[in-house]
Length: 158
Image (tube, rainbow, N blue to C red; front, side, top):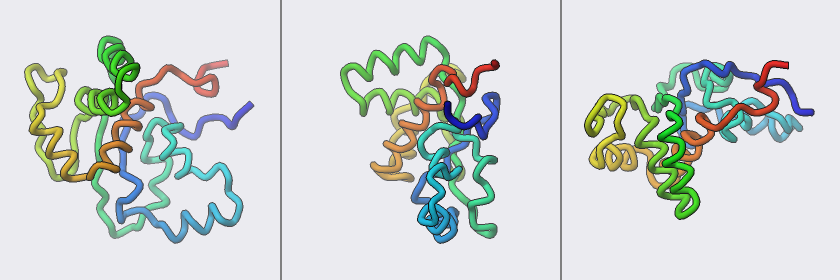
């Protein structure tokens, strides 16, 4: 049996990408190298904490302002679209997860295509990708999927 969750299931998911300069890499790396196999930041980046930034904020440099990607969980219909795309293309499923779940990004004004709950426009997706790069966009897509997956056994009430 794994450790109990270090996060709340009902929090607002916020992604700070792994290459953001706001992370205290010296501290994180030294703790991991010292044998912390279940480090909170590792759990955060694996998607295990569903992007609860408050669970790892202590591992950030105090005077740095990270780029924050605020997400919402996918609806069941949106999740089905992402899952269907995953059978054909991981890249398309990650992009769809970002298009449907990204609420806001530090420094970018996003405009949804259509209704407020609709997907982001292609122009917005390009702006986000330009901001975080190919690797960062891939990471964002994986986290968007992790945020919306079904409950893990450790997250369920006993």
